[in-house]
Amino acid sequence: MTLIRKYFWLGGAVSLGLGALFAFLGVYDTDNLPLGMRFVFWTSTMVTGTGAAALTGPFIFDRLLPGRHPALQLALVAAIVSFPVWAVIIGFTVGLTGRWPMNDLPMQFLRIFAISYIVVGGGYSGARMLGLIGGAPEPSGAAGVSPIPKFLERLPAKYRGAALYAVSSEDHYLRIHTDRGEELILMRLSDAMRELEGADGLQTHRSWWVARDGVDNIARDNGKQKIVLKSGAEAPVSRSFAKAIKDAKF
Figure (cartoon, rainbow, N blue to C red):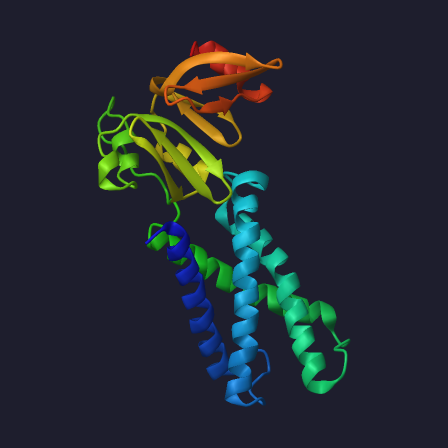
């Protein structure tokens, strides 16, 4: 099963499970509705929230607030997610009552934000427990031991013992470049770099980390520096990392 399918089924299962739980509990003053209507209502909001989190989460974690405390990252994701969820709730309210819910809108949004934070935080914790996203790095052992073999254990068995060339970010996935090919895993670049701390490599761009063993040569294209990997792939070099790469004598 691919990571995409795993993520799809995980999100779907969480949405259905939370929809059933919230319907049973009658959360958000829905206990006056029939159980079936409550289930449709809450499942719709959960699916909306899950989809919004899947779209915004990678941007928040990897690009806007990389390396920041997860509580801050999750709060911003929850705040963004709350808007489409709020729209779904308003739509249901208008459809059921025929009235626009104008009373106490700020408090309604705060309640939705609180629920969204709990749900998003729970999904984040569950994904970490299942190994779908990276957690805190484990000690690499004795001094001089490369963290790369441990990192490559995330990949299928054929990559065990491979030479790591680079890691590049693609939305909420990482593409792992090795001498045995490439593989996608669901992980943040910031987490990968923490796990690879101590390895002989450098970040070359906000979405690339390159190992020294993976470098074939350094070239320029229209005045822009790039690193050509031994696989033929090209890693961009941004200005903010150019000096560090020059000092490292890649």
